[in-house]
Length: 251
Ligand code: 1GP
Image (tube, rainbow, N blue to C red; front, side, top):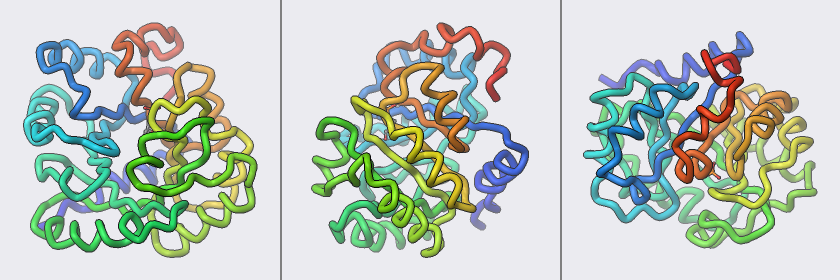
């Protein structure tokens, strides 16, 4: 029996109570296995509420192993954030079932999803349909390269709002505004605000967010969940250096 929408229900509840959420994104290719236990300790000391696992182009065959190791010591929900169907692991709790709505490459709009559906049907993963919207961020990001799609212009709020709304109307239960991993510039604050104001479903924002003030800007603009990948990957002390995160005050 598939898990009962627990992850999504918690996200909805948090949104309703204005409790902000934070996901740490782990790319299996970038894990330093010798220091994984120390990384897990840092995650447990951080204000993270979710772990996302995935990347545009994961070549590591060790996704299962990574999630098993994480689950031994971390009680947060582990959600796949896959770049393609090869990144499905039934060890996780859920999966963002993504459709790259900003692009016009059918592989990332529906083809990968058709391939993944029968595999997912055999798992107990909680499947959370997510409209994924890539925004220009100053340079070409891995998502753009791998998906061979163009991001939406960072000054076109109308197009971004229309894309996010279409995603919601198509039945996506989350919208993810993405600048791309390691992005030079995060998604503009005004754009986050306009999208958040127009959506009913929860809004995830990620890409290039690397400071406490940037995280706060996103929350203040209406992001329900912020994703931190590169900043924590580059510096496992990232959250400790942000004093206001102590005791999870931001949440
Ligand atoms: C990438 O939104 C995530 O898909 C996180 O981005 O690595 O820049 O934090 P960063």
